[in-house]
Amino acid sequence: MIPVTFKTPANGKIYTAHLLNNFTRSDLIQAIPTLGSLIKYRLLVNNQILCLDNDAIFNRQKELIHPNIQILLLNQAVGGTFIEISLLKEILLEDLKNEWTKVDRILTICDFCLCVEMCATIHRTSVCIDCFPNYLKETNFELRCTRQIDNRDDLYRISHRTSSSGSDLVLCKLQPPIEMNHQAKKTDTPRDQAAIFCESTVDYRTFFKTTDFIDRWSILCDITDLLKNIDCQICYCGALLFNMTMSAKQQCSTCLRWLCFFCNRTWNDETMKDLIYTCTNDCEYQRRIQYDLVPLLNAPTIMVPDRRCCPNCFLLGGYGSACKYHSCPYCRHQFCFICLETDIGCKEKYNSSAYTPCTAVKKQEYSMFPRIHNS
Image (cartoon, rainbow, N blue to C red; front, side):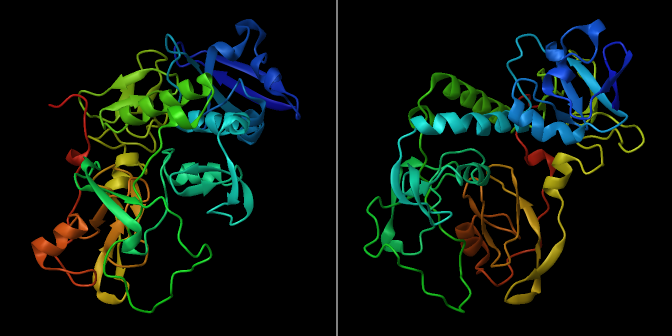
């Protein structure tokens, strides 16, 4: 038997239960008879929400429940529309197995595993079902062509549509290359610019076919857009929270859980500090703007940050052991890891190149992140 305690932040009550070693999702839902079905709560274990309506996801989460673990019972927000984003992505990946049979596919070589499979096509990127989850994680769940453009004859720019960075949108040509098995020539010459990738995207509302799946994907898009704002958070109970003071320690008005607003973890007075923008315990936005300096490849006298927050999409990316010009793996914004200007802007403003210094390493501040409520 596995002894487990349940706590409700709303009133501080503690409940105990014993689960069978091979307990099921149903066993957990009925673990506290006096409370009835626990499906009406959001169950939080080690800052992860348990999925109570999908056996496959729940079975992967069971390892979180070990003897004497404490599970928080969070009252769900009215309507229950919002779901913690990592769990929502897990649900979408699980539902994708059924949705995939309805997606338009062709028999071709998958660009990721290089096997001949029935693949979906995103512009000129072909992906099979086995590779699709990793593809989505790589693109932050955006349906985007991932083809790297090695030959400038294989791209064109459209100036009437612009990318989020303000520059012309770069697309690879739809015509396949003449030699299907052509491999780029290897060279020992260091590259002098960030890698160029196609920026074409596909609308998920036409790519996917099932209404329920499309609706759930729309929720993911809404949550993703909301969470780009540093003063916005979604509690594990599903409540949408806003922070007017920007202090780390906040209490959810729905489930009454105390949390760090910026990393969403349950508050711990022993490990966290109530500061502006951060709890200091490996906190989300603090991690995004911090870095260590490492030698620049092919120019070791120049020090470059080992990671940077993209100035365009605000997601964290690592230095790829190449030149100082970086192409964000999520939005493909190209910028200098040292001065944070675009690669073109760095060259023009500082008369610099991929392996020469431009300016002192520019620090990133919390003020760079967008807000819903501007002070």
